[in-house]
Image: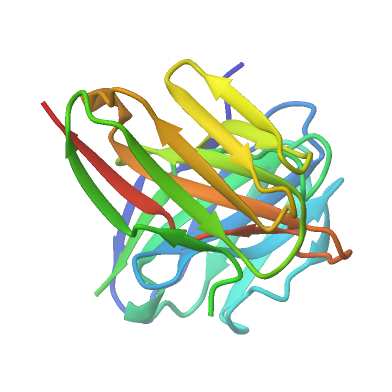
Length: 114
Length: 113
């Protein structure tokens, strides 16, 4: 089992640029979660999907953030335009039984917006 | 205000010492999970506790869920440098919510050789 795979591992971009983060969940997991981690706020849930359908996006900071899951093996989180305050580590996680069940995290994408 | 408060926030100890970290809330949880996160990696699940008063052991780590299911503790015996990491608790509220799993802010543990 390859685990949850995220790309890129690091992303450095300038303010105003579009950023796309990618995630491949564990095969067979039907829930996918996007989290953001910062020193100030810890781990925050941004959005989660069940069977490729967005269920709860109330954690998405604002309209600059969007997420898609076109199929069971791929999801993207897009920020457009990016701002310095978006700098954080973004994690994707998947699970088999839903929001309360154990999560399997990827190794994250460290985003720096200058 | 965090739903789950973890303490201490930072802990630095010598190899061989024992330690306890805490995860507290005023809310009741149907289950609680503990994760460990190492630098540059995502959190990794250590254990899930579901019953009030439950105690689970994982080698030198002992996890306890409070009787009222509002708090939990993690005790490490004879800590080793490999135990270094960010320890996160995460709870599922008893009352239904779409955003069911909430993470605490974590305890950063450093075990010095």
